[in-house]
Amino acid sequence: MTKEERDRAEARFNKAAKAAEDARTGKTGRDAAAKAVLDNMARLKALRLAKQATEPMPAPMPEKPRARPVKKPQTKPLTDWLSNQQSGGRRT
Image (cartoon, rainbow, N blue to C red):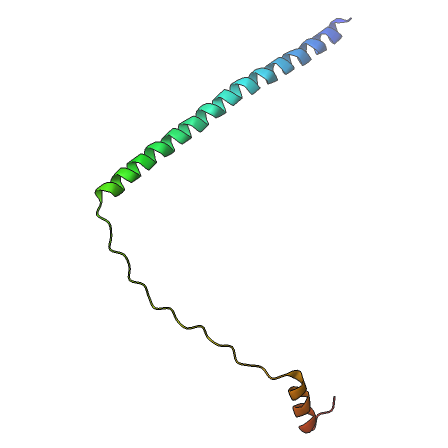
C-alpha cells in the first residue's frame, strides 16, 4: 500500500468518524433545544392561566338575530325560453 492510498483511507475513516460524532452531538443539541422550547411553552401557559384566573370574566355578547336566507329567483324551463324565442320572430 502506498503512502497516497494510506492517506486517502485515513481521510475517509476520519470523515466517517467525524460524521458519526456530529450525528451524536447534533441529536443531543436538538433534544436540548426542543426541551427548552417545551419548557418555555409550559411556563407561558401557566402564566396565561394565572392571569386569566385573576381577571373577571367578561359579560357574554348578546346573540344577533340571524338573517333569513335569500331565496333564489325561480328560473323558467328551457322549453319556455325556446317557445318565446320562436314566437318572438327568432329562428333556431
